[in-house]
Length: 387
Image (cartoon, rainbow, N blue to C red; front, side, top):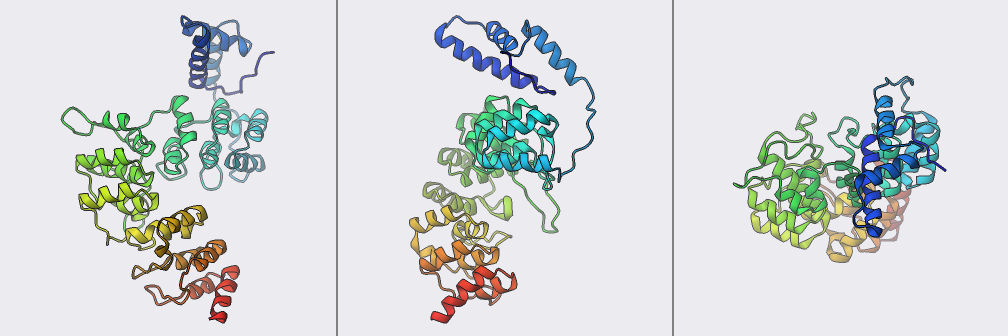
C-alpha cells in the first residue's frame, strides 16, 4: 500500500528521505545507488519513477496557495501547537493530514508548529511537520530565530539535529550552540578571520530604548561574541576555548543583556566559567533584565522562569546560592516575582531568608503581594508568622 503525499509536499524532505533510504539499503548492499533509493521512495508514494514524483512536487510548488489566511486563534492550530509542544507526534500527524495548510501557520506569539515542537525536543514531531511542508527557515514572530536557532537556544539538540539531517544548515551561531567544533572552525579563514555571512542567526537583543537590534549582529566581533554566548549557555567547553582565541568582546550583551559569563553560570559548566574568568570576563557586570551579577544570574534566571530542575541543580552544586544576595536581588525575590510557588518552597527549604530586601528595599512578600501571586503570598506569610 502506497503512502499519501501531503498536498504541499517538500522536495528537500523527499531528497533527505531518499538519502536515508540509501544508507539503509547499503547496509545490505554496499554497492546500492542513490537512484535505486529514489525509485524506492517514489514507488512508496505511488509514482512509477523519481522523475515523475519530482515533477509532481515541482508542479504543486508552482501553484499559488488558494486557502484563506489562518487566524492565530484557529482552534485546530491551537491543538496542533499544543500537541507539538507536548511531543504528541500522532496528533500532529492527524491534524496535518486533515489540514496540511497549518504546517506553516502562526499562533498568537508568532510561533509556527516547528517552533512549538522545539519545546518537546521530539524528532518524530519534527519529521511529521517537515513532511507536511513545514518551513525550517521560518522566523519566530518578530525575532531573528529560525527553527534551528530556536532549537539550539532552547537546548533541544535532538530536534536541532533532526532539522540538520533534513537539510537545515547550521551557521556559526547554531554550530557553536550545538558544540560542533569542526563547523565553528570552518567559519574562519586560514588567517583566523571570520568569513562573510558566517552567522545568519543570533540571540534576541534589545537596545537601551527597547528597539530590537539586528540579528545576526553587524560586525564580525559581535558575531563571534554572540557565538561565544550560546556556546557558554550550552556548556560547550572546547567551542568556548576556540572562540576565546578570536578576540570576542567579553562584555557583549546577548539575550537579556547578559554577557557570556552570565550565561556560563546559567549553563552550569565550571570549566566554561573558569575559561571566561581567566580571559578577563567581569564577575561584577550586571545584565539589564534582572540586574544580576553573573553568579547570581545562574540561579535567579531559572528561579524567575520556573525552571525547577535547574534551580535544584544549581543548589546541589552550591548550596550557598539559596542565600545569595548580590546587592540587588535574590533567587527568592525572583521566584516570588514570577509566582513560582514550588520554587519559593524549594528555596525556603534550602535556607533562603524571606526577610532579605532587594535593591528597592522590598521583601519577596512585598513583591508577591504587588503581583497578586496569592499562593506565594500565603507561603511567605506563613514563614513570617512562624518566625
